[in-house]
Amino acid sequence: MKRKILEIINKNGIRDAGFCAFDLVRERLLPCRALRRLPENAKTVILLLFPYKVRDAHPENICRYASVPDYHDITQKYLSNITDDLKKEFPDYKFESFADNSPIPEVSAAAAAGLGVYGENGLLINKTYGSWCFICEIVTDLEIPAENHFKKCPVCGNCKKACPRGDLEGKCLSAVTQQKKELNFAEKAALKKYNTVWGCDICAEVCPLNKNAANTYIPEFISGYRDRYEYGEDISGRAYEWRGEKVIKRNYEIIYGEKTEDHRD
Image (cartoon, rainbow, N blue to C red; front, side, top):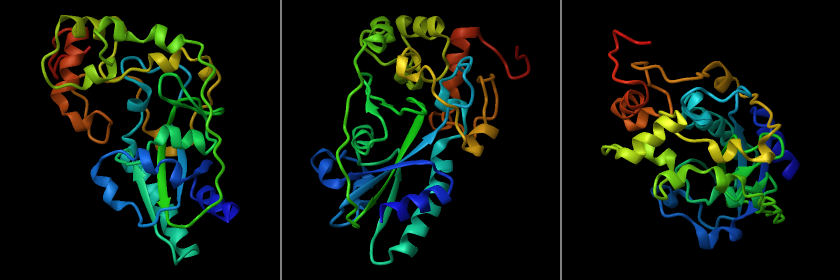
């Protein structure tokens, strides 16, 4: 059964997947609207990894996940094809897919599925792609044998030492870049210091387990890659679109000075 499911996933273009018993996450489900989509009598969570690191060099002023097209649309296309094939192969069972808006505690579930270790920074660290993976799930009422492989990282402390929270009174820099309200002096200073208009990868960049992380094979991420945000660019289909253009433009102006769309550097 496992082999057939993995064959279906691989046939649809995804190389890394694993299985976690639903009972392992049942008491830790996250409150969200997607909770109602869980199959009744859910038995198994199928975890899938979508690696997104395109180049070894870090993007200039955005985080890595923002350098590729918005993963929600791309992963959903793959998930839809996979679930369609699973339903054909196992017509008596339900398969519900989740990307981002998921009740599954995805990092711990993926670690339990043997897809990596649970990092001190709260990220999954896969042995091939490091932390640079989107995690998606397919929850089914089909019972698939699944062992618990959960392990934590060696805890070297690099991520905590490098984290910018110390400059932000405990706030996450990535969250600061996404907030709509006016930024205070310390928040503006942090954007300049770390040169980011969207997101933060510092804890992952300093992780020794990410040192030799492989680049993605997913064609949509490769073809849609951007190594920086340019003021006034079309943000449709990008990770930062959901927050609106004003937020990322404001961040750009904080770092580089006020610009107009007719006078870009």
